[in-house]
Image (cartoon, rainbow, N blue to C red; front, top):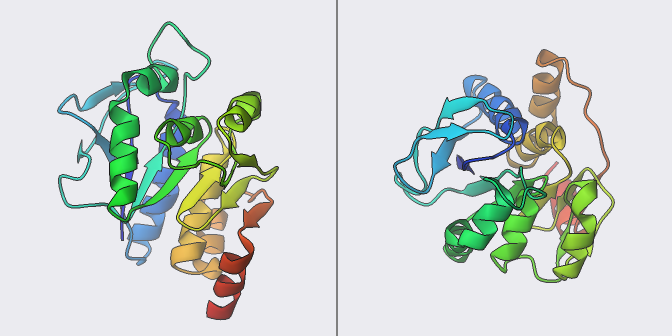
Length: 211
């Protein structure tokens, strides 16, 4: 399974690196997950919202459509500098999100990355969550806001603020591998999982049937 995490100038570092560490731990632990940091163009060096400079692995989709496109947030409240708000206004990332979803990718988001999904027009009135400071904006966008750490609405999975990206990563491992593996990764990271996780009823029933 190919999971690409789309980063941009002003991204919140933990939004991206938290789930990346979980997913790469799963990959080295034998789960067939290949997690990569990706950008839209060839500007591979990214400066995060806290000043951390890091390198993305490659351009989004350069190795084929990802099975999961994970969109972090950061900088939604910053209306004058880089970040999610600036990317929403620029529209290139929302267009890429919409295109990936149309091509069959599952979408996931952390924090205000959910607002980039909303800007892409893929959430509509579906169930979602975001950072608590941005709940009002998400409601205005038409989403059914759920008070949960992670919200699984089938092909769109959203998580709350910042550290919830770790819970999102663990949930993705649980959903696409199994709960035992997710638990072992959490123990190895000395991380206590937080909830709740909300699942769309029919998806929850399907997941229980697989256990």
